[in-house]
Image (cartoon, rainbow, N blue to C red; front, side):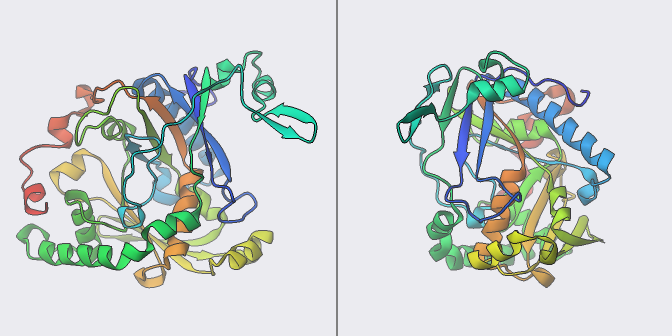
Length: 367
């Protein structure tokens, strides 16, 4: 689809807040953002593809598509409250609280002294976008994700469990190293195999270069179809923004590439002091991105991404969670209302038989 086209009309939108702002910053990651919710996964996929076409066109025009060959990485979640962070740092799943659905035509109000104003200026934003009716831009309703997402709260939920989670992964890696198919793999790709085929906590985030694979998983393709009426999410991750904050050195590794990044805080202005006061000290980051030469991950166009310190060292949890939180907020996202069916496209081999076969020998060897 051509860039700069108008997106489909949404059903509504969901507003997220990371207030109090974490990490404190100017222009690196927003404290609040909203996600448009579309009536179906197919319409959301159309909107996401239009948005990502624009992102890629702008990157190519600016000459800033330097990471991962300029590709975007995609991921799908069956619930809109699920985080874009690896399972090692993810809190235990809790059924999200019910959210109030508020009509766009009668938003809640806030008071400033004696003046009462709508909490969201729908009409002004719609007018700026060239529309007289805010529902053309936002849909018919909006919801808020509560509680607010702060890095401190996220860290408090998982920090005590990290040693146990790391031990579970170590034991799984030891078992994996004994399998004939995996003996010749380097340590990172062995980690990727364990992440892909087992349910152990992992510092790797598994993604795909195919948005349709993300749609398959977002609709429950690897487990059971999502509950109708629930809201799922499609993510498009563009890591190229990191080139504005780090100097980069990209090298080839087996199955992918390693990006070594050195912070350029001397160019960050006020953000340098805010990050240091917040407790995120200067660090070197490494991004490993690899694929696996096995049937299932190949069919899924799977990539595996991790954040590490210099030489692959484990980052302090607050530092790692800070950067994943920033990546989460810099992603392009579209949400959709689940209809209870799994997204498939047989013409492109997006089917349960191809992406999640029952007879995969590694899946049986690494439960």
